[in-house]
Length: 163
Image (cartoon, rainbow, N blue to C red; front, side, top):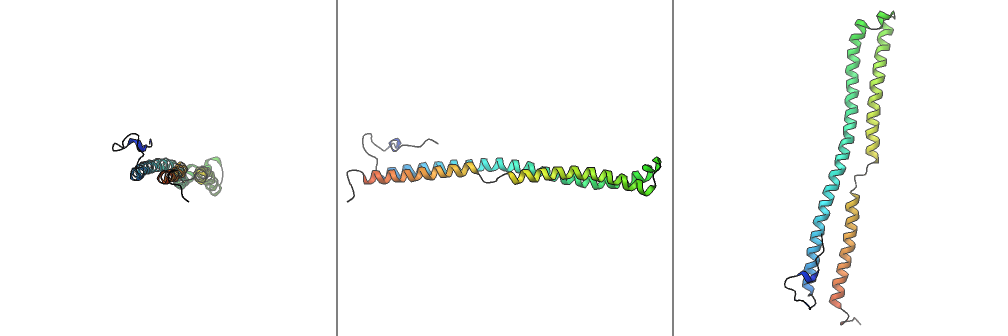
């Protein structure tokens, strides 16, 4: 937003000093515009952060679903291993069922753990604080303080020094 100067007031006559009312109106208009810009910036920044957080939550959910599918695979493997497993290789049926289920379970659980831990690690690093907006709000507050000092200085003016 481009700040207005008090000379942009159509009722202001060139060559004269703006009145206190004009200065206050200009300050109000500029502050209102800046506040709108700040709100828009905050919305944009939070949307971006929410999208990143959503993706990482997706990793966690994906890891959990793969973990659940591990349970399904375990159950299906049990039926398959009982029918055709390691018995054909000459192992005892009890040992064949145990080894087959253990191998499948370890692989699926390891993949699930990697995905879940990756998502959690990334989420812990991410800050949800709108850094750009907070920085911009600080600059806006400084600008507002400067404008108030300018208005007070123009009102008091060098012609009316305080004693």
